[in-house]
Image 1 (cartoon, rainbow, N blue to C red):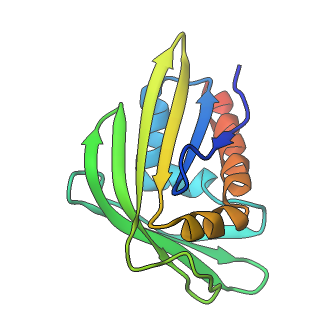
Image 2: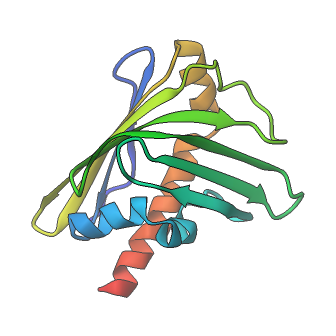
Length: 166
């Protein structure tokens, strides 16, 4: 059985997210690295779409994600480079915030460092993500946006995708 997102702050610059999926590790990996799959679930709250989802999942490869509000057309996104790719067990990347016309001050010039591990036991995959921000203030700013609530909305969509595929 899947469990809702578990969010902790192990240090003054980090956010740790743990989430389980009733799906094989390779499927969960693919859902996080293939643009055609990401665009189906990584949308946050209803009313958003993802017009840009580019991923070159290899060490030194880049990614760029951009979301758009269907209500007012405002956009924001993230971009960065992959620093570690060990399919299907671990991936790490830098993350820069692109405020677009949404705004916000999560960017310091220094990227956040994101690492995600995927472990599987008995057909259940556990995703463990560590987000390390440049400062406590930037971490707190990112958390205050409702980021992890949006993540859980997306993960629930991903659960539905896995159920339909089973």
